[in-house]
Structures are given as structure tokens and as C-alpha cells.
Image 1: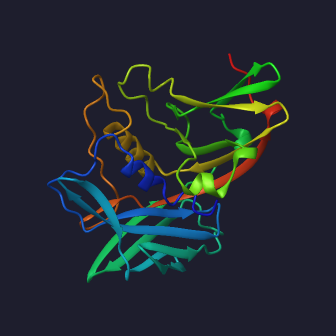
Image 2: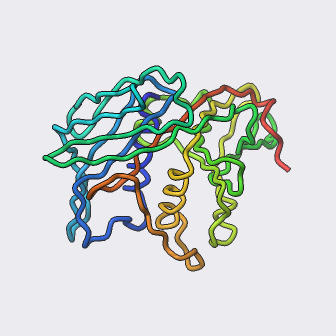
Image 3: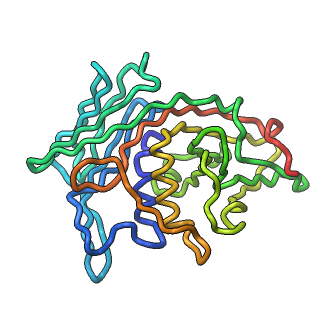
Length: 272
């Protein structure tokens, strides 16, 4: 569970239906990861993308100095090798709505980014993007992949508690859902009806993790999906996927406030 969010951007970026990096563009590095208040251990990955006629692949960047600061607080990240850096979260008192700043020093260059810590609305006070229907002795559970026009932008992980395992998460099998304040792009109804589902015993519970994301990070994800997962003949004009890393770098350094909760199936809303 500790690296659940670290590789989200990497898995999205490398599993895209259309490359978001032009073949004529060369970047010094790709930055993945950020700060997630749900866990003590924090991870950031630095990768170099090599594009050739035979395809693209990434390799880790080692030997960088990686620091995240928030006022007098700071995290010094340890180089674990293969481009993976690990740090320990400081006391978050009085940091809500504050900016967290990332600084990377690598090969004589400095790369910087910042993102805002948006306070989370508890799961029990939220519209949870899941519903259930009766399937004889079981529940058929359906989770919406995307929601639009919501009051806040959030990232969700909704899994049957019995299926929760480190292995399922670290190999990118865990499905994420997204709720956006923005309206739906012009991709007809297929996007609006995108779901995934589970068959669950009526005695089971759902594990729900919710992460508040900043408006800038939400816009980045929205634009990224427009370029990749949401493409279609009637899609909107392709977006300019602009990250927040300074210099010749790609990616987005994020800060997310997270909560998790186990919810009994009796408290999950019924399908209409």
C-alpha cells in the first residue's frame, strides 16, 4: 500500500494509447510521484525516456539530490537506485492549503515544481462513485471510472477488502477512479458510462481510499486523458499536456491529502 500512488502517473504515461511525448522532443527526465499524506513513506521516481524507431523505454536516473520543502519543514530523499527515491513525511500540522516545493539537482541542473495541499472531504460526506445491485446471494458492484461536474476533484481507489493486497497494487492492477469539477469532454456517452465491476458476497466490505487533488493537478490529468484514454473521432481538440516541472523535464509533482475507510455493503447505494 505504501507505493500505491507513486506509480500512478508512470502507469498512465506508459500505458497510453497514444504517446504523449513527441518523437522530435527530447527531455532530460520524467518526474513521477509526489506527496501523499495517507502514508509516512514518500516516493519519487526520476526516469529518462529513450525513444527510437523500435519503440520507447525508460531508465532510472540515479545520483540526484531530491528535496521537498514546506516552510520550515523538509524531506530529504534517499537514492534507492534505478531512479527511485524515498523520504519520510514530516508533521503536517498547519500545512493544509500550503504549497509544497520540489527541488531536484541532477547533472549540474536544477528542476523545481510546486503543488498545493487541498484538504480532503471525508468519505462518509462524499458522493461515492459506486453502486450495487442484487445478484441472488451476492452483490453486483459497479464503480464509475470518471465523474464530471462534481464539487471537488478527487482520485479514488475502490476495492473489495478481500482483494486488497500489495501484489495487486505494485503491479499496477489496481483500478483508479477520478471525479472532476470540469464538464465531460466531447466523447459521446462511452466515457460517461465507463465502469468496472465486482461480484461480492453480501457480507463483504469495500475498501475506499480517497485523495484530494489540486486544481492544477486535476487539469493536468484531464488534459492527459484527453490525449490518451479519451481519444475518439468526436473528441475535443487535443490538449496541451503541460506539467509543472521547470526546465527540460516532463511530469507532474503532486501533493494529495488522503483518507481511507472500510464501508459495509449495506451502506453502499442501490442501483437506480
